Length: 159
Length: 98
Image 1: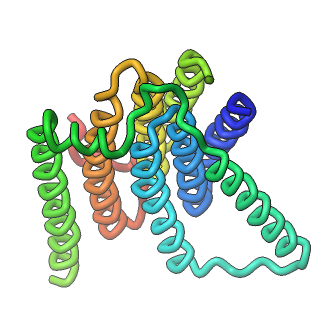
Image 2: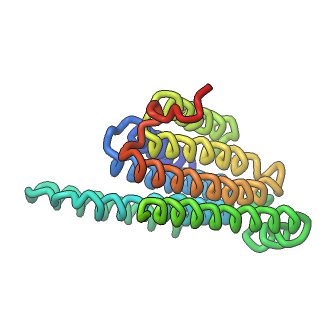
Image 3: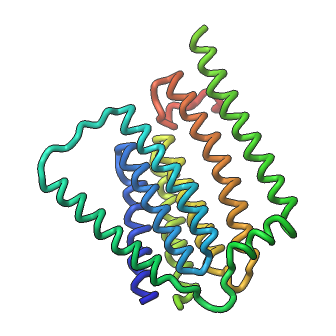
């Protein structure tokens, strides 16, 4: 069963990564990235790294979702007409839910050396606390840089 | 249990796709997305060997945060460039060319 899940997740990840790279439309690029990141999260969960999987899904899946929403709003993409598309989307959603439900309910840690979120958190705030604070400072610097870049560009344009 | 070599294979394919995207795509947004795919591949390698090296998951988390910071600044630069030139074509960025 693990092998089948691994094969499905791998195909999912690589297929959507190809979409993210190959498509000429920015919306499909972002969509491909989001789904590919979710596939990577599934692979991480299969490799008994649940905390990393959750972080991966939240950070990159969420980011790509937000980018998709922004692009969708910015481009005001017209809604496709036709019933078969709606049925197809509903079928895809139900199928995805079934796979996820099976995966989450049937999820069992692989091997005794699985890293639990508590152990990873203890390690993060213990032995690797300095690295954590350095990354936190880096993120703060990045946020400030984004604010300065966007704000500076806006004010220069206004002038 | 799935063999770590299988994870390495998938990670290598993902990384190769990312490299191809960075090299071939001229759209800055697509290049950033390709960069994220490469980060994903590295996280996958860390996860695959997590049972051998438990700190790998922690390091992957730190790398995830650092890459998110980098990508955030990259997207901000892209927004800035689009405001100035109405284009995200990296081929047109020759202001710092020597």
